[in-house]
Amino acid sequence: TVPSDLVIFNEPPMWGELDFGPYSPGFATDWLLDGNRRGQRWTWFPAKKGTGEALYVRDYGAAYVSGRYPGWPTDPRAIYATGYDEPGDAEKFEDRLFDLKVGARKNARPARGRFPLVVLGQGFGFESPFHQHVLAEYLASWGYRVVTAPLTGATGPKTDVSPAALAAEVGDLALLASREPHESGLALVGYDLGGMAVVALAGGGLTKPDLVVGIDTGLMSEKLTGDLITSRGDFAWTNLTMPYVHFTRTAAENAARNLPES
Image (cartoon, rainbow, N blue to C red; front, side):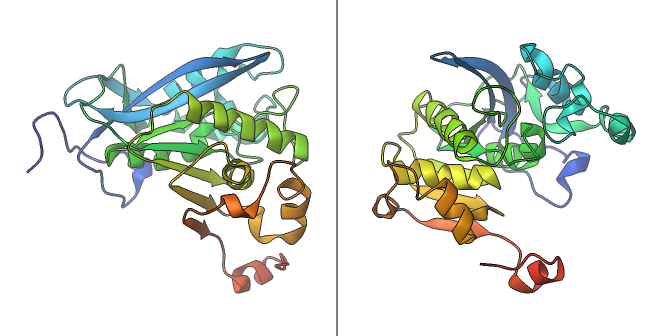
């Protein structure tokens, strides 16, 4: 039996064959300040039936460029681009995506209940939360509150694969976790560099997740792990007492791409 404040509705185009859960995903953005570091927070949450307004890809683009601080892109199509450069000719064909409806709704009222928290880390070259929006919407439809932030560098918007950039993302994810209630459970999920960041955060011992998930992250690379994670002064494998789930390509698929595993 589905409670009266829940809703099941038709899937948007980008969901493919994924099935909605019993909740209507809501979406909101705001800004957090941690010392001199200002960051954008994207939140997806289980929402009440019949509340909110339809949300489109263009709305995600508008949210992404709303920061307007130095170095941040101003063209909403930047959600498709890698890095923080303004979109070029390669992104022009993506204009047709702007009018696609997404799964979440804006200005929706949160559903009643206490929901587990998912803190989601972004990856290098896929810094915009748009790249993970289907995952976030899907989780919200099944009763999870999902928060994330665009991946930015240590001293400005542009990032790289370095200890400083990883430390900045770890700090951002720790801030997100600390600002949200998670008595009902906490999962740290990260794609690519974000996957390394969630392992580093859990290994630091200050944030106590119930589950850590890495999506195609470099954790399987001994060199990357040594350079970015185990070199951190606060990191200890003994802090990783929770389940860890790792999604990646098979060895054969990597070999076909000339990406040998270490």
